[in-house]
Amino acid sequence: MRAYTLNTYGPDGMTLTDVAEPEVGPGQVKVRVEQIAVNPLDWKIRNGYLAEMLPLPLPAVIGSDIAGTVLEVGDGVADLAAGDPVAGFADSGAFAAVAVTRRERLTKLPDGLDPRLAAALVTSAETAQRVIALLAPAPASTLVVNGAAGAVGSAVTQLLVAAGHRVIGTAGTANHDYLRRLGAVAAGYGDAMPAELRAAAPHGVDGAIDTAGQDFVARVEGLIPADRIVTIVDFAAGARGAIVAGGDPTRLTAETIGTVLEQAAEGAFTVEIDAAYPFGELDRALARSEAGHLRGKLLVAGPSS
Image 1: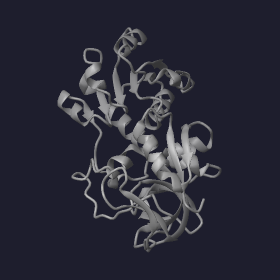
Image 2: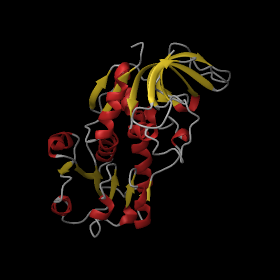
Image 3: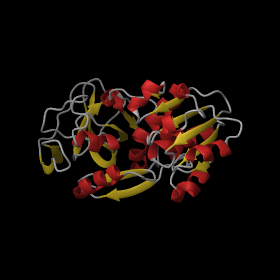
Image 4: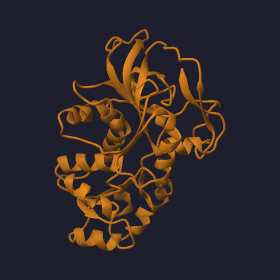
C-alpha cells in the first residue's frame, strides 16, 4: 500500500513509498483511509521535537486522525462490520492507504455526515470536551478561549456557548466575524489583548482555555488566576499554576467523539476546513500547519480517494 514513512527526523524526513498493509488483530479494526486530518502534533513528531517523549522505531508511519470505511474486523469486535463508515485515531499511522487501530479508538459515523467533517472533528471534539471537563466552569461563567478560530478553539467555543457560558475568543482580526458567528465576543491576539479582555469582561473572567500559547498565561496575569486556565500547548505554564492538558496521545479513545459527530450531522456543530490537499501533497499540509494561524482544520485525502 502507499504510505509516507518517517525515515529520519526533520522537515525532509518523510518519503512516499510502498509498504506492507498492516494486519488486523483481536480487538482491532482495519480501515481504508479516505480522509486524514493534520494536527500540530504530526509535524512536531516528524521534526523530532517529541522523540524522547514519544520514541518511534524508524522507519514509521505517523499521523493520527482518520475517517474511512471498515475493511475488516478482528476477533472480539462485534459492533462494526466491513463497509461501516468510521472516524477516529489510527494506531498504525494515518498517513497511509490503510490503517489498523483498536476498536475503542473508532466511532461509527452518523447517517449523512461528510467524512471530511468527521475527520476534521476527531481531535477537536475529543480535546475540547477533555479540557472543558478539566476547567469545570460554574454555570453561566465568563470564559476566554485563546486561539478560538482554530480547530480545537472553535470546538471549545461552540461547546461552551451551547452550555450557556459567555465566551470571549482571541484570534487575528480576519477571524473576528467568524468568532461572532460561533457566538463569541472577539478580541485580538496582539499587545492590546489584556486591555481588550478587560474591556470585554468588566466584571472579571472566571477561567480560560488556551489553545494557542504565545505566553497567554503570563500575559493575562492579574486578570485570570493561573489555576483557572487550562492549556493544551504551553507545557511550561504548569510552573505558574496553570492546568496542563497533556498525556499520551496513543491512549486517546473515541468515547466522547460520537456526541459531537451527531450534532455535526444535524447541522448544530461545525468546523472550518482551512485547506484540503491530495495525498501526494502531505508535505504542503504539514508546512501549512507549522506556519500556524489557521481557521479550522487541514485535511489530506487518502490515496484512493
